[in-house]
Structures are given as structure tokens and as C-alpha cells.
Length: 485
Image (tube, rainbow, N blue to C red):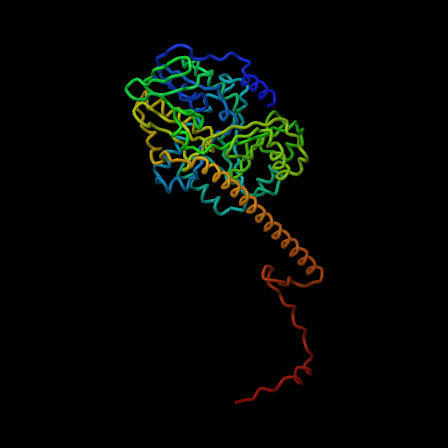
């Protein structure tokens, strides 16, 4: 994947021509932001026959979009049990079905014909840092029976057969989930949108918006645009014109690294061909380019140079897979996402003709695709399913104080996860040692011709040695004769 990242970085450096909006323009729909959500909306709306203009302040896929492992699977950042508690089972099932539609939208677009070199690989494995077999069973039943999602429960031995580490216990395998090259996908999405008729203007920041009246007005440094509908898909990067909306999101920067080639040994240690994520959301990784490891782990609530975190990624890899040795990090990248207070994306109509699609941090690529379908189809077909997101209102994220709190919560969560994992591994080692000791004791007893003995409550019951027969004389001498009545 290093060649992919080099070519994309050249594009980002401005070595290709970018079209700015330099003339006044009218459109049915104006999308602000050329990330995954904005481009999905543009593509779907253009396919349905609308005239669409996309305004991007920097360049396609800037900052967050495409800067991730490209995992596509159903679901949301909010745990399923919490989602059901918040809105009820029936609405939760409808939202889950929408997230599956979003994943299929990505799959339908991410073909070699549409996006050469997109590199689709199947299967996502969510592994647990603790021994949680009982909770796993109920979750699998719920996903299979109530949410019509194909999943497999993996026992500890099966997880460790494909991941040579004692850090992980049980797993949930999503065989129909998949992953793509995230950076190629966002640029491929732009190409498909253009082919469908959408016009994309880069280096065109929005200075002001007048969303009153039937025809909305958008002002840029060099031109004006009028549209019946405006879709705010700029996430935390909307800037001054929509600062209040941006402040409903907690900005979180996530960083990832790609190792130098590791050779065949990486396949011996990591035999799973899809992507792997832990249940605590700390680590997320997969093999790319044949024998390189792409690993996403550290996060901050402030922006920083990704190269600063190369050491942290390296330590995480060494901690989880010590057999890989001292790997070299060949490339680092990162992006800032917007996370909502309630853990669900922001999708819907703020007022007539003014739409929002944001808050996709930790949500997965399926949700930005789902937002594109929902908003475009509502505008052009009257599809009202976006109202399922109405219970998740816009909530202020706390500003600078929220960032500090978010960082502290993140640190606490990672520390708690590490402590819980260490305790689970310690308990497992104690159980193994107990079994080994019991096996040695049983073998020794068999060799001595005796049964097992209980040394403490954890051991099997003691079987007493059979009594030796006493001579009749000794018996009569040591016992009193019974008295007859």
C-alpha cells in the first residue's frame, strides 16, 4: 500500500489540477464538504437526476475521509444494547437495516471496474480483550435472530489459531463485512459522482450561508451559488459560518501506521485475511500490500503530526504480537473525525432545505454511505426514514472543556481495557498452571497406585486409601463385647 499512499499524497500536495468555483452557479443541491458523506450524497442525488454542486475548502478526502483502514460492516458506535434501550427494539432494527444498506452501497461502488486497485478483502473479526464467553452467546443470538446479521462466534482456540497472541480471547466474525483501500475509495467516489453529473469544486471554502427563503445563497471567495437544498457534510471542518453546528461534535484525531515489509512471518503470526478490531476500540489492524501491517491505535482530541505517534504504534504491535519483533514503521497518517455526545451520527433536516450529515467518528464507512442515500432520497423521492435519527438531537460537545474531558476519558478507557486484559490473562495462566499441577499429581498418584488427593478446594476430591485388614485377635482385644438386652 505504500505506492498507493505515495500517489495520494502527491495529489494532496496539489500536483494535480483542482477546479475552483470562479463563476456564479445555480443547482438543485449544494453539498458542503467533499468527504465520504458529501460525495455519497452527491453521487446518489446525481444518479437520481438532480443537479449537484459540491464545495470543498481544501481537496477531496481532506483530513478524515479515506484516512482509515476502510472497514465496512453494519452497526454504529453506540452499542446495540444501548441503542435498543434508547429507542426500542423495532426502531433499532430499522436503523440497523439502514446501516446494512449503507454497507451494500459501498460494496456496489467499490468494484475493480469502478475503482481499479480498490483491494476488497472479506471478513471482519472483533476480538475480546477479556474472557467474555457468556456475553458473547447472547449477543450472537440477538444479531442473528433480531437483526438478521450473519455472524459467527469464535472460541478462544480458534481466535488464537489465526492470531498468535494471548491478548485476545473470544471473537465475533462477520463473514460478509469487508474492507477497501480507504483513500482510493474516496477518490473513486468523486470520479463516480462526476461521471453521474455532479460538479465538484476544490479550494472553494464557504464564507457565508443564507438559508432563508426557497433558494438558499452560498458565498465563496470568488463566486456565489444558489440552491434549493444545502447539505452540510463538512463535519468538524465547517468553520465560522456554521460554528454552532461544529461545536456539537468532539474532534478526535486518530492515527495509523504502515510497517515496512515483514515477509512471510507476518502470515504465520496473523493468519486472518480480513481486518481485526478489539471490542474496546483501542486497536484496529489488517495486512496490506501482501506483507505489511496497517495498524490504527492512538487518538487525541487535538491535531498533531502523525509522525509523532510512530513509536506508539510500534509499541502496540510489539505488545500484542511480540513474535513480530522490532518492526519498522514506514508511513504514518491520521485524520480528525467528529464524534457526537450520544454516539450516533447526525443525519436529517435542520430546517426546510437545510440538511446535516456529520458525526461519523467511530461509526464506520457504512454510515456515511447510508447518510448519502437517506438525504438524497428524501430530497428527491420524499423518503422520510431519516426521521429515525430524530431522537439523537444536536448536543453541544463541551468546547475546549469537552476536549480535555474526552481525552481523559479516552486515557481512562484505554488504561481500564489494559488492566482488564492483564487480569484476564493472569487468571488464564493461573488456571493453566492449576491444570498442569493437577495432571502431574494425577500421574504421580497413578504411578504410586493411589487415587487423586485434594490439596485445596480447586482440586478433585480425595479418595481415601482402602483400610488394611486387622488380625482377629487384635480386633477382639481392642473392642468391647456388645451388651445384650
